[in-house]
Image 1 (cartoon, helix red, strand yellow):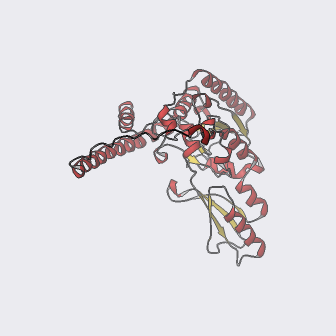
Image 2: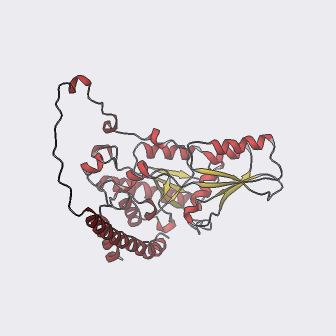
Image 3: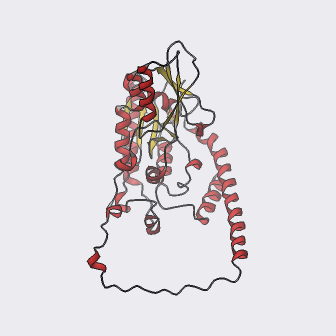
Length: 344
């Protein structure tokens, strides 16, 4: 396993796909959330109120949903929320009658607003503890989370940003604009306002519904769940591995090759994003550049065999790209089962 990871990271670095931006920050600035499917299952012809609610969902922005009216399947019109197609065959996550309250509960909730606010303000990840209902277990899990995450934030070091990555627009803040911070939120399973969030969290992995232990979810980027830590899996070494991934600088430019599942979020991330003066730096005044003479730079001579050079570059690039893809596939297949077993 260690050899495979080393090989993959080496190939990524040697081909210029690695960058110095931590995964959590790159995801926040560049990873658009995958869209959830909302099926409207009519109980018959839609009435005026139902049509207005369908329009409310269809026009809802900004949010990562897409709406489709399907053939009648019930006696009363229902909302059916399905996982993004990026997870394979879309499966039902949550369903409810088509009402004003359920439409609004699907689109947003107080905890999702809190998560979006913390992430856009610069927190590295928000850890949500889904309680099991056993007070002693829930309190112990929260205490461990808070103690260990504070320790990690105090002892870990963020990678130093490369100036070229800043110039290339890979990150909108300098080194001092990044911070290590892992706030913890508690979520009761019977919280009526958060049922959509609870169902989507439990649907991020296929066997979480049956778990009756506290479950910790690290959420980063634009509302992306890294994975779940269940019961005894909520321990120092697993928290450290999650934190190390989130602050690491490697293949974060390729979203599909990184772990995680997006949540339904209604947030204008570009507006919420806290940017540094790098993006707001004033342009020079006209008076500052008046009288400046243009600098003439001689152009290099044209190569004698441009086609051959291009063909050589294309072939070598294809070989490197194939090697990267194969290495990452091996990492995904081998690492998925190993990590999943370890987190429980």
